[in-house]
Length: 218
Image (cartoon, rainbow, N blue to C red; front, side, top):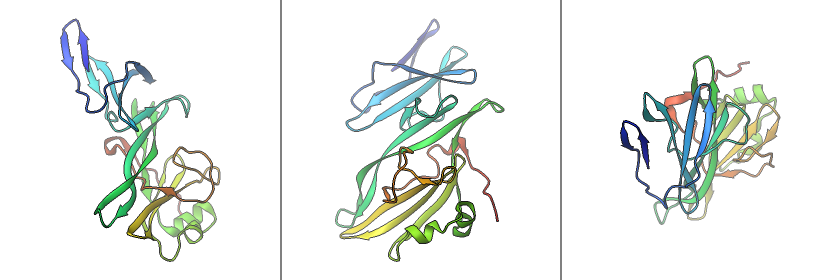
């Protein structure tokens, strides 16, 4: 992939997958227009994101982290879908297996003219009870389960990551609870039941632009 201007040609990156999609997409955040180029793989896509400044292509801090999704959350919002193998730990293989796809959420802040990620702030059980007015941990986490992490994103998504014993290893699971609606949602933010989702959600996918919320306190 190249950027070509009157001043010359700038090589951006080589494909490590099945090649680049010939369909270019654009996304405008504030005064910046980004060009989105999708590199294709068998079961996922990786989006490279560039803007132009002083006649040169500049790669965004959220480029190459997953597939950028622009048509779900309205203006000044987008998502990145991460593809990971993190559903279970196989003791015989000594590694993580099982493919998962999880969404991470981004917004444009006009006061700073920058894009940020809705990152997750660590949260305690008593704070969850205060915010949700119910003991979600007690309702969802069984006596043999062990919690890995719990955090709340700035867009109101509460995440509880835990592991559950399984034959030949253990399963990695999570719940997502939307505190703004009082509903459980899946990895695509669609309303769902109380069956856990597979894999582990990260507090953020792009630490350089992570925005951590302050938690409501009792």
